[in-house]
Amino acid sequence: QVQLVESGGGLVQPGGSLRLSCIASGFSFRNWAMDWYRQSPGKGRELVATINSKGRATHYADFARDRFIISRDNAKNTVYLQMNSLKVEDTAVYYCCWPIGSSNYWGQGTQVIVSS
Image 1 (cartoon, rainbow, N blue to C red):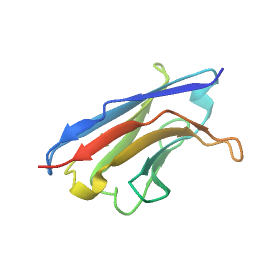
Image 2 (cartoon, rainbow, N blue to C red):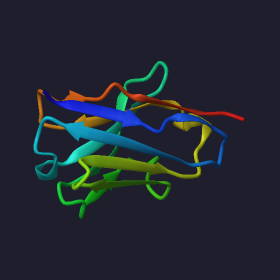
Image 3 (cartoon, one colour):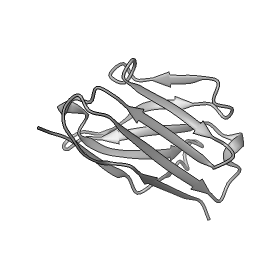
């Protein structure tokens, strides 16, 4: 079955960096675009970044542009989110998503807390 397993979250000070990873299994990872989403307390889930199947095209939410980098390694069935210059407002649960429309698949999420 499809599995998306995120890791790499944690507690970091403002201005710090974290690298999130998501290992995918159960589908042809190399053939699909992948997304990172996040959900902050009291807010809905929002798109952070998207990467196409070959990793050559990316799209970022305005808050992520210039600070976050999405990438992938199709040989490892893994998508990454490098987060730099983290802000307190980046505190959220970050989710990996296989976006196939009405049946999107989600990971369990990894918690990121940005606090001094």
